[in-house]
Image (cartoon, rainbow, N blue to C red; front, side, top):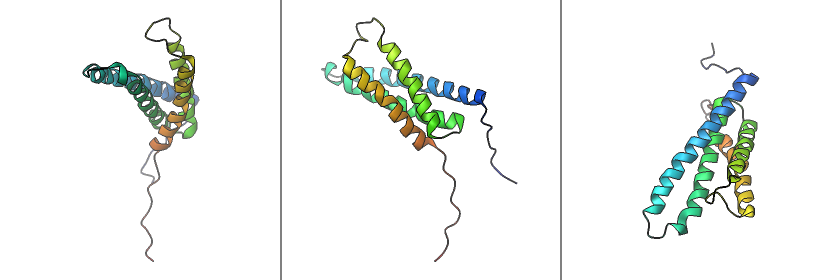
Length: 139
């Protein structure tokens, strides 16, 4: 008897898994941005570290979204890529808001948003459950 249960991959379960991964992406990003904002404003010159910290939050939340996508859907790299593309679309749409703090150079915004699917796929590769290897054969 097989000890592990296999999940059914229906379109509805796949879509809810990707939606949960997006929620994980957004909450991880929000928590990291709050933490990094607190760190930046405890320094003497917060302007010098804002962009690296924001980029770090984006990268870490993209990795978390990819890991969440592969864990919630049970699929591999494809779920991480789809989750990354959806996350990239969300971030790009948020960057178009007419807020002074949201405005950045278009080249930087495009470069940073293109990192999201790549890092989400990396997160999917890292988060994929590996099969347990049996006992090693003695030589």
